[in-house]
Image (cartoon, rainbow, N blue to C red; front, side, top):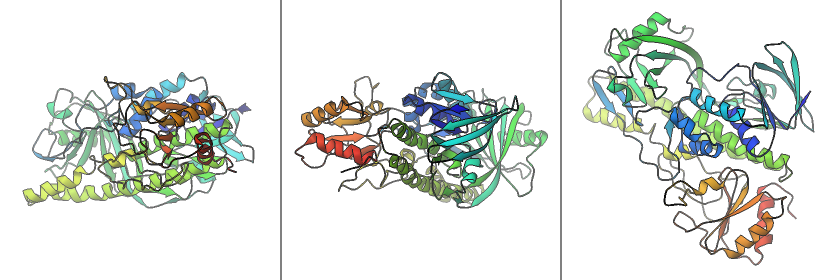
Length: 531
């Protein structure tokens, strides 16, 4: 019997991220993962600026960024990659709302960075080559059983909570009888290959190549670079019902056709068959069992919101678990995880589904030789919505959850344009704190609830510092050096910001007792009893 605070089923990027997040809060966990190592397949390929902010908090941003794709944030439509260009989409605009920029980074790179970080965390016990079998939960916790695939022995892990991060076919989700709502759209095949393309200038011109060949024996393809070397590529293809993936010979023949180089050196690496779905669950929590990542939602990959949603799931869930386990919050706080993340899952699912439906419509126009220049231009403008999606990347503000709403409305959500706000439920605005642009307001948010005070908010600052000295509240205090940001609480006001950088409350009226008001707000946000 192994005792731990949190049992995490699944050691992909979401499970590893949760273990890392919990450890940063001083909470121990055991991760059980069937595979012997991190994935050897690119799978997902994009990280939003919001996700890169999470990686910055975890100390892995630069390592992840070093493994990113070199090409600009552009989709190329072409007959072959070295042949006639049909058109390109516009690059995403420069990011001014974050200390981080979005990146095209394959999942294998992300997993390796997370695994190295987890290996240095004493609070995380990662058990690879362990097949999760079953569990039982009671009022006090969960007992999970896993089989060591190398020795054949079974281990039992007793934990306060079990988190299912075990992917689209989640055993945990199925054991709890949680249904995924939405359609299965198509069966897909990923072909991952190496090709001698690093010296080709075309190889670094974009993050996706939409190849529409004239040769009817060559399959149309969406091809994406999967590393900075411009030699590893992912071909994403639909697969007819009952069809088998291409064998190596057919794969090589098609790849040479895509590049327009008959003697191109190509080496298949591996392939993956999967189902494209647009599904979200009815709930994310069942007692002491909670779902995150692909176990909780399955989006079409168009737009790359799957991994990003999973990472942001565990940034949301991690601090809430930690506060509940440390006695800083009531367990009612954990119910807000589902309220908040289901709002985001619904939005990301609908947006990704719209992208998936748009792709074949755009391709039909681009492939048709009779299409007018105006029609092609309009199709490419539509296609640019796929990558020019800053608003979707930063996420939908939470309308309810672990927050205290006020009378000022949330900014309207726009898929393309991000409107920063300090409204409760929104991600707190980024503002540089130094002339060198190395330190951001977002660097304040990691472990504590943070009271952010305006430059002249002496009474709020004193109240916060007094409460912070009382160790049972998990509060820190920071002061803005100026108000050169989209802040509505004023120089004498304040905002309470959660460890996941989401604003929980902001001052909007004058109060007579700042300490009592702040304590009352903390009780509301953290799900503690309020008299």
